[in-house]
Image 1 (cartoon, protein in one colour):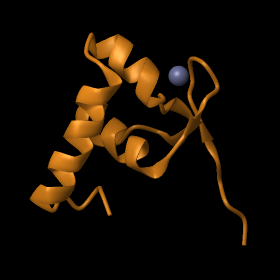
Image 2 (tube, helix red, strand yellow):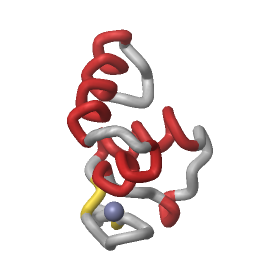
Image 3 (spheres, helix red, strand yellow):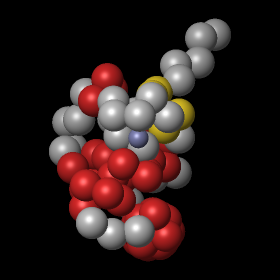
Image 4 (cartoon, rainbow, N blue to C red):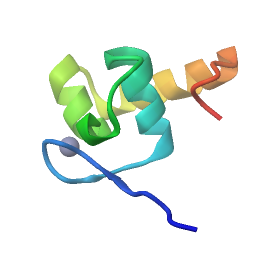
Length: 69
Ligand SMILES: [Zn+2]
């Protein structure tokens, strides 16, 4: 079985599955896998903090968003 590791398109940082879900939720539901951004770059783009985004992930999980799991 091959495990696809996604990398940030800006800084080449590893993008975990929660961050992938956040890409889809916040940026684009149909975000292609090669256009993902890591949580740090996403925070910069959105002018918020990584902590804010981690809170968002928890929020969406608690809402039962199907992208997260
Ligand atoms: Zn990045």
